[in-house]
Image: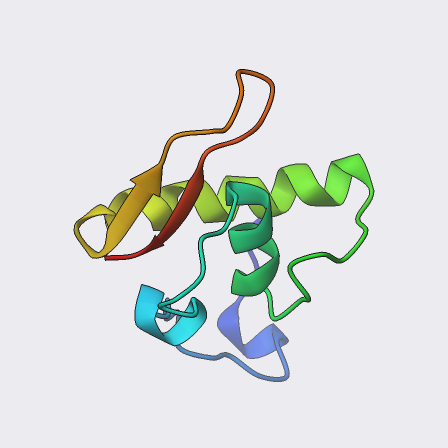
Length: 87
């Protein structure tokens, strides 16, 4: 249900960081690891499935919006994810 802005203690600007601000330029990451990094978590942090799904809901559009700044490496096998990094 909508709420008045005044009902919140603090309202912050809605800002996304750039790939250069989130990813090490010498490292390639899975989408799962990028999702964690976008939230300030360790890329290897253990998460429950529901939390990981929510993080992916944020990470995938961020990756699409920043596609020009990212590169992709094919997965080593069909059952592994691809890896992404800064171009």
